[in-house]
Image (cartoon, rainbow, N blue to C red; front, top):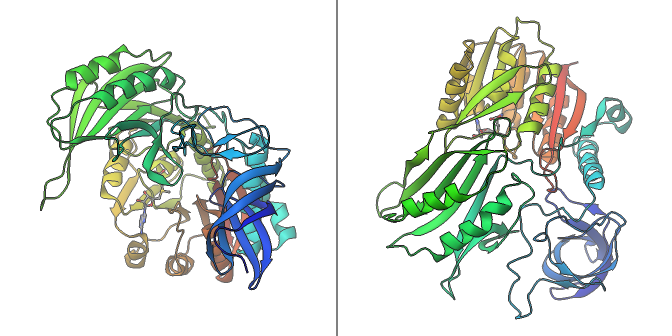
Length: 482
Ligand SMILES: C[S@@+](CC[C@H](N)C(=O)[O-])C[C@H]1O[C@@H](n2cnc3c(N)ncnc32)[C@H](O)[C@@H]1O
C-alpha cells in the first residue's frame, strides 16, 4: 500500500548496524522496515520513501517533528545536512545545488550524544547475540562486559584518505572527504575532528594548490595523511594517475609550509599510478623528501611496547589507542603461561600475534594478503620476535591442510565473518580456547550460534568503541569447550 514518493510521519525505534535509524509501519506484508539516515532513536520525523522492496524501504529525512533527547549540535560544521529551527532539512545551498560544505561522510553520527552512541553500539551487540546468536539473555547478562569507550572520541585516527574529484559539468576539481554513499561527490571540508588537530592548517592551502594545479595529462586521485600518534611522525602521500608530475617541487614546498603543531613532518611521497591499456596497474612510490617510513608504537596495558615501521602502502590499525585496548584485552583473555602454540587466523600485519609472542611458545599467523604477511615478517624482525611463522593463503584451506595442533586460536576475520567449514575445522582440532575479534556483530552472532552447536561455550563478550561518531563496532569474545 506504500509506494515510492509517499510522504509519511514515523517514529524512529532504534539504529541499524550501518548507521541509519529504523522505523516500522504496517503494510500488506506485515511490517515495513524503513531505514532513515541522520535520525536518532525516539525521533518523530517526516520522510519521503525513496526506495521500496516488499517489506524494506529507504526514507529520506525531510523534517524532524520531535527531536531525540540525545540529538546534539555536531562539533564539526561539515557534519550532516542543514537543519533549520523548525526541524526542516536542507541538503542544498541557496543556488539549489548540493551543499559541498555539508553532508561529510567521515563521521555521520556526530549529531548523537557520545554516551548514547556507546549505548546504541552495546545494544546492537547484545541484541544480535540474543536474536541471531540465540544466546540465552540471562546467561549473556552474566558474561557481557560494559563497552570500552574511546580514550578520546576526537582526533583518534592515524590515517586519512582525502579524495580529489573532478566535477564533470564544470571541470572544477574538488578536494575533501566523500559524502556518505556518494563516491562521485566530496564535501570540501576545512576542518576534520577525526585526524590530528593540525589538519585545519593543512586542508585549505592543499585545496588551493591541488584544485588549481594544471596537469599535462593525468589526474590527482587522493592525498593520504598518516601520523604515528605515539611518535608524532607525519607522512604525506599524494596519489596521482598517469601524469608526468612536473610540479613535485611546488607540492613539496606547500607541504613544508604547513604548521604541524606538536607533530613533525617526516616523510613526503608522490605515488604515481601507471594505468596503461593492456597492462597491469602499477604503483610507483617516489620519496620526495625525508624518511622512507614513519615509526609508530603500540603500548599495551601490561607495558609491553611494540615498534612498527609504516611504509606508504602498509596497513596499520587506524586508531592506535583503541588497538592498544583491543590487543591488551585479547592478551588478558588468552591467559598465557609461556607454553602455548597460538594460531592467529586472518592475522593481517601480524599485530595480535606479535603482542602474544613474548608470553607463548609459538605463533602461526595465517593471512590471504601476501603484502600484509611481508609487513608481519618485518614487524616481527623489527621487534626481535623469533617465534612467529606466517602462512599465506585462505584460512579455511590452510587449516584443512594443517597437521599442527594449537592451544589457542585467535580469529579476526573481515566483516563477512567465518564460514561453517572453518568453524567445523576449528572444532575438530584439540584447541581449547578461541578468541574471536569481530568488526560485525551480526556475522559474529551467526558464527557463535554455529560454535555453540558444535559444543563451544561463550564465556566473555565485550564491545570496544574504535570508531567514535560512526556506526562501526568491534567486539572481543572468548569461547571455551563445554
Ligand atoms: C579485520 S582484518 C585483521 C587485521 C589484523 N588482525 C591486524 O591487526 O592487522 C581481516 C584480515 O583478514 C584477511 N583475509 C580476508 N579473507 C581471508 C581469508 N579467506 N583467509 C585469510 N585471510 C583473509 C584480510 O586480508 C585482512 O587482513
